[in-house]
Image 1 (cartoon, one colour):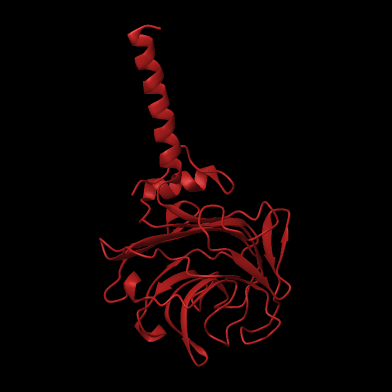
Image 2 (cartoon, rainbow, N blue to C red; image 1 turned 120 degrees about the vertical axis):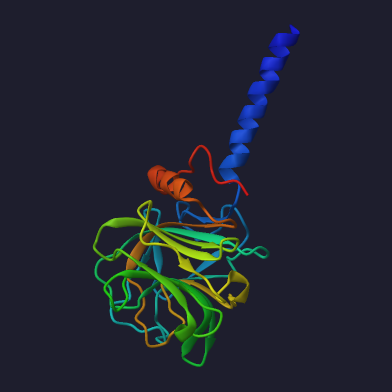
Length: 251
Protein backbone atom coordinates (compact mmCIF):
# COMPACT_ATOMS: atom_id res chain seq x y z
CA UNK A 1 0.00 0.00 0.00
CA UNK A 2 1.60 3.29 -1.10
CA UNK A 3 1.81 6.35 1.11
CA UNK A 4 -0.44 8.20 -1.35
CA UNK A 5 -3.11 5.50 -1.10
CA UNK A 6 -2.91 5.53 2.71
CA UNK A 7 -3.31 9.29 2.69
CA UNK A 8 -6.34 9.06 0.42
CA UNK A 9 -8.01 6.49 2.69
CA UNK A 10 -7.38 8.61 5.77
CA UNK A 11 -8.71 11.70 3.99
CA UNK A 12 -11.92 9.89 2.96
CA UNK A 13 -12.39 8.59 6.51
CA UNK A 14 -11.98 12.06 7.96
CA UNK A 15 -14.49 13.49 5.49
CA UNK A 16 -17.05 10.81 6.38
CA UNK A 17 -16.57 11.39 10.11
CA UNK A 18 -16.84 15.13 9.57
CA UNK A 19 -20.10 14.82 7.65
CA UNK A 20 -21.61 12.49 10.25
CA UNK A 21 -20.56 14.79 13.08
CA UNK A 22 -21.99 17.81 11.29
CA UNK A 23 -25.28 15.97 10.82
CA UNK A 24 -25.78 15.82 14.58
CA UNK A 25 -24.10 19.06 15.69
CA UNK A 26 -26.41 21.24 17.73
CA UNK A 27 -29.31 18.73 17.69
CA UNK A 28 -30.09 17.79 21.30
CA UNK A 29 -33.63 16.34 21.08
CA UNK A 30 -35.51 14.63 18.26
CA UNK A 31 -39.02 13.14 18.20
CA UNK A 32 -39.94 11.41 14.94
CA UNK A 33 -42.73 9.15 16.27
CA UNK A 34 -41.73 6.54 13.68
CA UNK A 35 -41.31 3.79 16.28
CA UNK A 36 -44.82 4.47 17.60
CA UNK A 37 -43.42 6.12 20.71
CA UNK A 38 -42.67 9.71 21.77
CA UNK A 39 -39.14 8.76 22.80
CA UNK A 40 -36.18 11.07 22.25
CA UNK A 41 -33.84 9.52 19.68
CA UNK A 42 -31.00 11.96 20.38
CA UNK A 43 -31.26 12.98 24.05
CA UNK A 44 -32.98 11.43 27.06
CA UNK A 45 -36.11 13.56 27.50
CA UNK A 46 -38.96 11.28 26.46
CA UNK A 47 -42.58 12.25 25.95
CA UNK A 48 -45.76 10.84 27.51
CA UNK A 49 -49.10 10.76 25.70
CA UNK A 50 -51.91 12.36 27.69
CA UNK A 51 -55.67 12.02 27.29
CA UNK A 52 -56.55 10.39 23.99
CA UNK A 53 -53.34 11.48 22.27
CA UNK A 54 -52.05 8.75 19.97
CA UNK A 55 -49.40 7.97 17.40
CA UNK A 56 -50.67 6.90 13.99
CA UNK A 57 -48.49 6.19 10.94
CA UNK A 58 -45.49 7.92 12.48
CA UNK A 59 -47.37 11.05 13.54
CA UNK A 60 -48.56 12.39 16.89
CA UNK A 61 -52.31 12.92 16.60
CA UNK A 62 -54.23 15.30 18.88
CA UNK A 63 -57.98 15.85 18.65
CA UNK A 64 -59.32 18.23 21.28
CA UNK A 65 -62.34 19.86 19.67
CA UNK A 66 -63.44 22.63 22.04
CA UNK A 67 -61.75 21.26 25.17
CA UNK A 68 -59.92 23.91 27.14
CA UNK A 69 -56.59 23.34 28.82
CA UNK A 70 -58.08 22.90 32.29
CA UNK A 71 -60.00 19.84 31.05
CA UNK A 72 -58.67 16.64 32.65
CA UNK A 73 -59.39 14.80 29.39
CA UNK A 74 -57.24 17.08 27.23
CA UNK A 75 -55.02 15.33 24.67
CA UNK A 76 -51.42 16.54 24.53
CA UNK A 77 -47.80 15.42 24.77
CA UNK A 78 -45.88 16.05 27.98
CA UNK A 79 -42.11 15.76 28.08
CA UNK A 80 -40.57 14.27 31.21
CA UNK A 81 -38.10 17.11 31.62
CA UNK A 82 -36.99 20.36 30.08
CA UNK A 83 -36.31 20.25 26.35
CA UNK A 84 -34.39 23.53 26.55
CA UNK A 85 -30.57 23.51 26.66
CA UNK A 86 -29.18 23.22 30.17
CA UNK A 87 -26.68 25.95 29.36
CA UNK A 88 -26.40 28.66 26.75
CA UNK A 89 -28.52 31.57 25.65
CA UNK A 90 -29.86 30.26 22.34
CA UNK A 91 -32.28 27.59 21.15
CA UNK A 92 -34.06 26.58 17.94
CA UNK A 93 -37.37 24.70 18.07
CA UNK A 94 -38.43 23.05 14.81
CA UNK A 95 -41.77 21.32 14.29
CA UNK A 96 -43.73 19.85 11.39
CA UNK A 97 -47.50 20.21 11.74
CA UNK A 98 -50.70 19.67 9.78
CA UNK A 99 -53.85 21.20 11.26
CA UNK A 100 -57.31 22.21 10.16
CA UNK A 101 -58.80 25.38 11.63
CA UNK A 102 -58.20 25.63 15.37
CA UNK A 103 -59.61 28.10 17.87
CA UNK A 104 -57.44 31.14 18.50
CA UNK A 105 -54.54 30.68 20.94
CA UNK A 106 -54.36 26.87 20.62
CA UNK A 107 -50.76 26.05 21.46
CA UNK A 108 -48.51 23.99 19.26
CA UNK A 109 -45.70 24.39 21.79
CA UNK A 110 -45.77 25.73 25.34
CA UNK A 111 -42.67 25.63 27.52
CA UNK A 112 -42.77 27.57 30.78
CA UNK A 113 -44.45 28.00 34.15
CA UNK A 114 -47.85 29.00 35.51
CA UNK A 115 -49.30 31.30 38.14
CA UNK A 116 -52.83 30.13 38.94
CA UNK A 117 -54.59 29.88 35.54
CA UNK A 118 -52.11 31.95 33.52
CA UNK A 119 -48.81 31.17 31.87
CA UNK A 120 -45.60 32.76 33.10
CA UNK A 121 -41.96 32.86 31.94
CA UNK A 122 -42.72 30.92 28.76
CA UNK A 123 -41.99 30.22 25.12
CA UNK A 124 -44.97 29.41 22.93
CA UNK A 125 -46.04 28.82 19.35
CA UNK A 126 -49.67 29.10 18.22
CA UNK A 127 -51.42 28.15 14.97
CA UNK A 128 -53.17 31.51 15.02
CA UNK A 129 -53.63 34.42 17.38
CA UNK A 130 -56.20 37.22 17.47
CA UNK A 131 -54.65 38.69 14.31
CA UNK A 132 -55.37 35.42 12.45
CA UNK A 133 -51.65 34.76 12.11
CA UNK A 134 -49.36 32.27 13.79
CA UNK A 135 -47.34 33.65 16.68
CA UNK A 136 -44.13 32.79 18.50
CA UNK A 137 -43.49 34.45 21.85
CA UNK A 138 -41.10 34.50 24.79
CA UNK A 139 -41.37 36.25 28.13
CA UNK A 140 -39.36 36.46 31.32
CA UNK A 141 -42.47 37.31 33.33
CA UNK A 142 -46.08 37.55 32.15
CA UNK A 143 -47.84 37.73 28.81
CA UNK A 144 -48.08 41.51 28.90
CA UNK A 145 -44.28 41.79 28.82
CA UNK A 146 -43.64 39.26 26.06
CA UNK A 147 -41.63 39.63 22.88
CA UNK A 148 -43.51 38.12 19.96
CA UNK A 149 -43.44 37.72 16.21
CA UNK A 150 -46.16 36.69 13.75
CA UNK A 151 -46.27 34.58 10.61
CA UNK A 152 -48.68 32.80 8.25
CA UNK A 153 -51.45 30.72 9.79
CA UNK A 154 -50.52 27.12 10.42
CA UNK A 155 -54.06 25.70 10.61
CA UNK A 156 -55.08 25.69 6.94
CA UNK A 157 -55.10 21.92 6.49
CA UNK A 158 -51.70 21.89 4.76
CA UNK A 159 -48.41 20.52 6.15
CA UNK A 160 -46.06 23.18 7.48
CA UNK A 161 -42.67 23.43 9.13
CA UNK A 162 -42.28 26.14 11.76
CA UNK A 163 -39.01 27.10 13.44
CA UNK A 164 -38.62 29.39 16.43
CA UNK A 165 -35.06 30.68 16.73
CA UNK A 166 -34.01 32.48 19.90
CA UNK A 167 -30.59 34.00 19.27
CA UNK A 168 -29.04 34.93 22.60
CA UNK A 169 -25.96 36.50 21.06
CA UNK A 170 -27.87 38.85 18.77
CA UNK A 171 -30.71 39.03 21.34
CA UNK A 172 -33.34 38.45 18.68
CA UNK A 173 -36.44 36.29 18.17
CA UNK A 174 -37.03 34.77 14.71
CA UNK A 175 -39.94 32.80 13.26
CA UNK A 176 -39.60 30.76 10.07
CA UNK A 177 -42.51 29.08 8.28
CA UNK A 178 -41.82 26.56 5.51
CA UNK A 179 -38.18 27.58 5.38
CA UNK A 180 -38.74 31.32 5.04
CA UNK A 181 -38.45 34.01 7.70
CA UNK A 182 -41.97 35.28 8.36
CA UNK A 183 -41.07 38.81 9.46
CA UNK A 184 -38.18 40.97 10.61
CA UNK A 185 -36.66 39.56 13.79
CA UNK A 186 -37.78 41.13 17.06
CA UNK A 187 -35.39 42.31 19.79
CA UNK A 188 -35.65 40.15 22.90
CA UNK A 189 -35.08 42.93 25.39
CA UNK A 190 -35.25 41.38 28.86
CA UNK A 191 -37.05 38.28 27.56
CA UNK A 192 -33.99 36.08 27.27
CA UNK A 193 -33.82 32.29 27.29
CA UNK A 194 -32.28 32.10 30.77
CA UNK A 195 -35.40 33.79 32.18
CA UNK A 196 -37.76 31.08 30.88
CA UNK A 197 -38.82 28.59 33.57
CA UNK A 198 -39.43 25.25 31.81
CA UNK A 199 -41.59 23.71 34.55
CA UNK A 200 -43.90 22.29 31.90
CA UNK A 201 -42.91 21.26 28.38
CA UNK A 202 -45.94 20.53 26.20
CA UNK A 203 -47.10 19.96 22.65
CA UNK A 204 -50.79 20.78 22.30
CA UNK A 205 -51.48 22.34 25.69
CA UNK A 206 -51.30 25.96 26.86
CA UNK A 207 -50.17 27.36 30.18
CA UNK A 208 -53.38 29.41 30.11
CA UNK A 209 -56.30 27.31 31.34
CA UNK A 210 -58.88 29.12 29.20
CA UNK A 211 -57.09 28.37 25.91
CA UNK A 212 -58.36 25.53 23.76
CA UNK A 213 -56.20 22.45 23.23
CA UNK A 214 -54.62 21.79 19.86
CA UNK A 215 -56.15 19.54 17.20
CA UNK A 216 -53.44 18.55 14.73
CA UNK A 217 -50.98 15.93 13.62
CA UNK A 218 -47.28 16.41 14.37
CA UNK A 219 -44.78 14.72 12.08
CA UNK A 220 -41.57 15.60 13.93
CA UNK A 221 -40.18 17.91 16.61
CA UNK A 222 -36.51 18.85 17.03
CA UNK A 223 -34.55 21.02 19.43
CA UNK A 224 -31.16 22.55 18.61
CA UNK A 225 -28.99 24.23 21.23
CA UNK A 226 -27.84 26.94 18.83
CA UNK A 227 -29.52 29.63 16.72
CA UNK A 228 -30.16 28.23 13.26
CA UNK A 229 -29.33 30.52 10.36
CA UNK A 230 -31.76 31.22 7.52
CA UNK A 231 -29.78 28.90 5.23
CA UNK A 232 -29.83 26.11 7.83
CA UNK A 233 -33.58 26.44 8.32
CA UNK A 234 -34.09 26.35 4.55
CA UNK A 235 -31.97 23.18 4.31
CA UNK A 236 -33.91 21.50 7.12
CA UNK A 237 -37.20 22.43 5.48
CA UNK A 238 -36.00 21.07 2.11
CA UNK A 239 -34.91 17.77 3.67
CA UNK A 240 -38.25 17.49 5.47
CA UNK A 241 -39.17 15.44 8.52
CA UNK A 242 -37.50 12.06 9.04
CA UNK A 243 -34.34 13.25 7.26
CA UNK A 244 -31.34 15.28 8.41
CA UNK A 245 -29.58 17.52 5.87
CA UNK A 246 -26.15 16.29 4.80
CA UNK A 247 -24.63 19.22 6.65
CA UNK A 248 -26.36 20.28 9.82
CA UNK A 249 -25.67 23.40 11.90
CA UNK A 250 -22.42 23.55 13.83
CA UNK A 251 -22.08 25.01 17.28
